[in-house]
Image 1: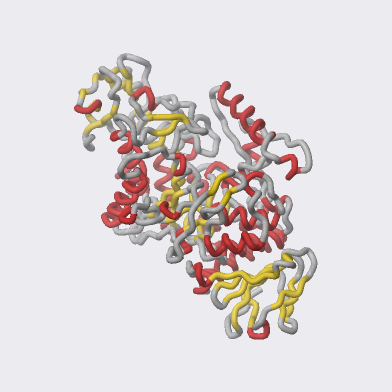
Image 2: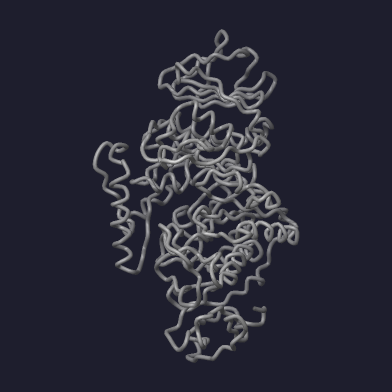
Length: 589
């Protein structure tokens, strides 16, 4: 509990021994109050484990490093030894362009160090914050990371804790902020030894055991979560945390654990002198997530708004299965682009109950992170296929334009910027054969009953999550951006992000300044007005005339295919988007 002591909370144990494999011995740990045990601190790089009442050695629940895998001994790590470059002012998560990536498939090397090689590409693209999918240690070498069991350890296959520090420092030197996806609603099933140490878990969720945040002896468990979150900021220089599926956090305490985390994060930000952000993924569509703790909210900096994705995706693809059932019209898109939540208290057909609550008018749009692709919406398709499999390049340009010109905080998924053709499939590498087979069967069963045969036009063979080929197929192909088709898409995204950065009306989070113009009897076109900027969209594959009252006073700022000015309208090519501003600006196409 102090820097000069190695500690572990094990209230169920009568005695705890410190096991030192490298020295071939066990040493008794000193019993402390409230179920804690301690021993003198170990030098950096020392392997160690804990034995409870003489049983087999177990890794440290707060292990900083698991170089031998999640079943092996832990290793000490001196986080304070890293020499951070000076001058990084930090960056708030709100309003900047996010870029989500999976370390294992972002580059051929699949490590944090090799991912540094891709940072210059992101700088040229114009993004401001890199979001890493979970890095907490999990069983096996490859996986998405949402089944982590060593929450304090950086996954060894990605390079361990020192590699994360190097990555963050390299990003900061290039002006990029870094966000880390963390999972506190459950732990994975393989290599999860926390329950042997104490009452870390309370009930069962669809993903695993829920963390004990409000039951008996929950205090040290809550501290386990809170300390973990703050450690990423303090020891690894991170700028933001993306909190996975907070709707699955079971906490009826007087002060919700996220509200407590919000207040402690604010205090740490003041101490460090730079902004720190908490971005929540929530399926609840509740503004309370981002309301201040002083008003009874959870105090999150921002939250994901999946309804915007659903509205854009269903409109462009025509998919209506599963949770897309209430989406797909321009009217629904209008509600999403102005209100963030489509389900804001009304009936949700998919859930079969009323859902959500409206976002107060005064709430800035930058409090919501939106996208047209992310790991969930691509990877949780039966085949992990990207929208480009069914959409034309023009339709992909429309998707990105709607997101990047919205009043929200936009996010891209790795490779989206060049229209990547590689899928992002669900992959695992469990060492436990029973778990591996359970995942195979569960994945096939889930998609066999989810309506995917309608989307794909027949029987679907779900890729084997345990197969190495599934993982390899999900790696980005960095030869694609040099090919003419992909190079054009990449250039469009660069120009689009640059336009957002230099056009205040587009960069604004003012939802009230956003409105849609369309003909309900002809849903082939629509115009999104962002103040004085107009985003003109032709959904039809054929050219269409899109009326604009002030067409002659407009110029093209950016277009996938340049439109032609007519008499009070613009002639839009098929599957095209154009961003128009008042004459006098700097045109681009």
